[in-house]
Amino acid sequence: MRKSIFIVFILTLILSACSASGVETMSRYGNTVDDFEVTNQDGETFTREDMEGKVWLLDFIFTNCATVCPPMTANMTEVVTELEARGVEDYGVLSFSVDPETDSPEVLTDYIEYYNVPEGVDWQLVTGYDYDFIRGFAENNFKTIVAPPPEGSNQVTHGISFYLIDQQGKIIKDYPGVDTGDTEFPLEEVVSDVETLAEEGPK
Image (tube, rainbow, N blue to C red; front, side, top):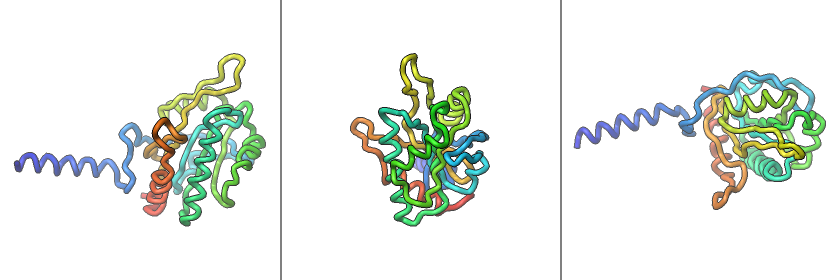
């Protein structure tokens, strides 16, 4: 009996050590985002260093997307609207275009204006790289796919997750960015996790 209690105690310590935060890190993550230098919707350079000190939600989208991107962006807008209503600070959204040849800064600006994002939200929509970069970046950091359109199509294949990143650039977990089968988009979980990390502050 004592041995069983001891084992449970040790396991509890190990699990607690896996996450110093109130938000538990998914086992497949824990790595930090690789360095990058891209261009945002304002034509300004945005780098990995610019992420420091804030909690980020990151996704992969493109403006010509005919399926998942519009609901993903609508859901992300719901998230930031709720975060603003709660008075959460020190967070941002980072959306990488998976169609950088089409998605110029001007195109990205027109795209996000449709969604009525609350004023003052730090939402970086980025481009200014090639397919090789975005494919490698998505796979190496987030274990997700980006593939160019098949011949005769303009629809890029990409993942639909939102990724939570802490103030040090560490990838914490992911969420489905849209409703999936019987599972609804987890709005409350996403908002709560961002709020928790933001309130805890940089470690």
